[in-house]
Length: 113
Length: 111
Image (tube, rainbow over all chains, first blue to last red):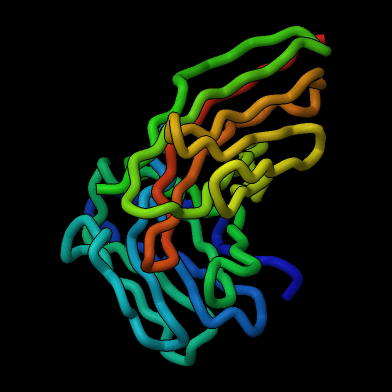
């Protein structure tokens, strides 16, 4: 597609519920990144894929967070047993190697109540 | 470790005023430096970048010069418009193709 597409745009989850956030990157972009942006803060890195391989997951805050990209295209970020501190905007970005064409999606705003 | 420190906001300016948003960085080596902009309800968009010392990045009237001696990459615009109202992020890439972002500076331009 023309840009990075994320869905849903907004998600309200009850505490303890599991959620799944989807990212559809730009066609041909081998690299895919997830960031978490808390209110009033800059985005913070969560995890990185090159094709289907998850090369870095050092930013995932707990084992409740899980990301996958099984066919090297669409990625899903899953959060199990959501907590209030998980409330944030989750941004996906994709790129060619070397930051070329690095493009962010509009994000999914997750609110845990 | 690598990091960026960004001027805190919010910043409110009248239309046609001069804008400066300060950004300093800490890094090993000489990385590229970036400014991103986030308009309300949207994702981050690349505003400009500079790849080496003394380079000047520019776009849409915004400029930033990579100053190695002061480890700075301050964003400037000579005459802001209402449409420039947004949050601006200074960013530094690491070797893993991910970015370190500043905390963001919110700019509101009033007519």
